[in-house]
Image (tube, rainbow, N blue to C red; front, side, top):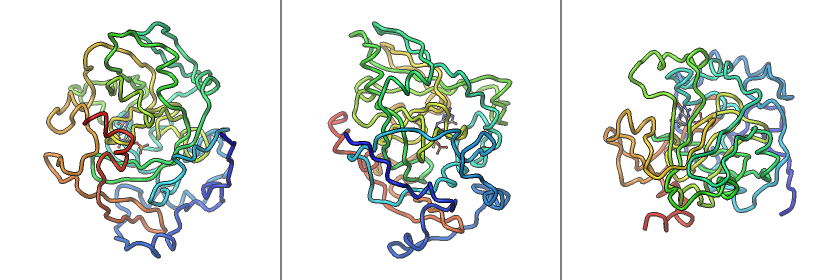
Length: 325
Ligand code: MTE
């Protein structure tokens, strides 16, 4: 594979990546108010952002990454979401229940991060996250990203296939599921949601082992050419593009191979609304809303979105259809 470092729109000094003109020439836009999602308080700040990516710039990673472009996932049939929107419109309940938690998330301590991989494997190992990025070739993949709340983005992730890690730890034959646990420290992850004692913290997610071994399943350590901003799940998160976004646990600290289907955060809270499998399936409505369409978020001068049809398995049926046949 060749090293591809084509200059990307997000390297431009302009914070607005997806050109609205480009969007508008092809699509009809629905304009909305900025609202709670990307507050008026956020936007003036953006003019002050440095393009260098320092610790002081919470909308960018702390450093550039070196990676190969994966031509199979270089593009999707939709424009890439703007970097600023992806860094300011987030779900990270450890830091609050609204979309604008990016400032709260800056308290996440990402130095000397370790990921413990164990359970039913022949080679259990605790990895420094930097070891992971050295051990596995980093690649860039642009994936559709569909939230269960019926909005979506298109995100250029940088990371490595989950299968690489799976092969390194060599699961035992009785390992049928994998459980992923996010960072949790009651003194740090202080979002209001944490005050609710019944929530089953830490945030956990799970996959069948065949799902983890699928070509698409990915660990992201970066986005838009740089390390992940904290609000996007630094320093390492899951990306499972054919499933709803909540299946992608952020800031992963533990990976366990297990025999039985593990309990997971949202499924424990409400198993009727948040199934363990939670593939993107337009014909399977959420109990409270349809999943046939989604708001594809734009990133023009005003917050905007376009309503587009939701695709089976988020458009990745060729990759994963056989898993569920
Ligand atoms: N991981 C943790 N630890 N905590 C969370 O609240 N939210 C999930 C997922 N991973 C969540 C999480 C949900 S609901 C979505 S849609 C995505 O993260 C959002 O990722 P983004 O903020 O990078 O777009």
